[in-house]
Length: 300
View 1 (cartoon, rainbow, N blue to C red):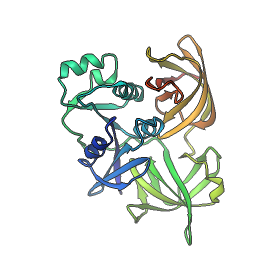
View 2: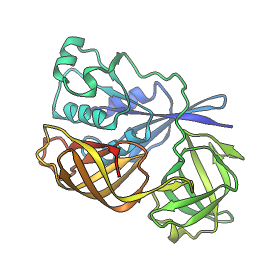
View 3: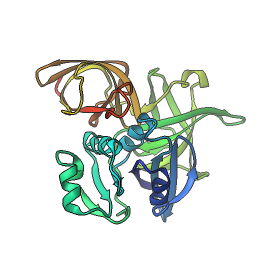
View 4: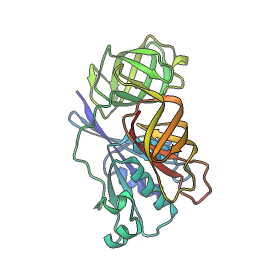
């Protein structure tokens, strides 16, 4: 059974982003998020790089939130974008590695108070072939119909899956059954977490899944309203209002009110509360970081 890992590379330099990702895999899909693969026996590594960053922040945050580890590249000339990436790496709460040839003392000083202050410095991305944690869900990026097969979706399994498993689609709440599983164009009876998959589904029409962003196992709870402890970065000028909240590859719009350290959140779509939620303000002024902070702990 295939198992795998998802890694992301973040940098303001688009050429460098691709160059670093190619050290870990071969380009397989070239879209808003480039996907690089490398297979070693039953292990498949996926490397994600946003192709429209820094112009757009959402795809960068979504890709990084799918990953188990994040490699951040910092070049010779620093700008506000490097600061934004440092804030995103901090908000994610993932294992972070810093790819740079800058003096370590300078890097630690410049990025003091962020995840890059303590990140391990490496010359290039590497992978120890660790397996991803089972979260009980599947990230969905495309849904379409294949003649003779029916409704198919592509995405990343963040859980163990097997043929005939039943899952719940978000946001519709529609129950679906896995008819078949494909990995790298090969049929599989089962697949582990961290692997990119194509799933053919029973008991569903394409229009019932057109807005889907996750499939979840029936044991996973979802929420549209909740309270959490939150951190707003001191560089941000806002603490309440409407934000994009990002986790597990998905971004959901939500309204946040603060009560001391407690944040009251109301979302427009349900999500499982399995990880930190990155807070983004995509409409902030040019040159200002769009990463506001993060929500860390569900408390009720």
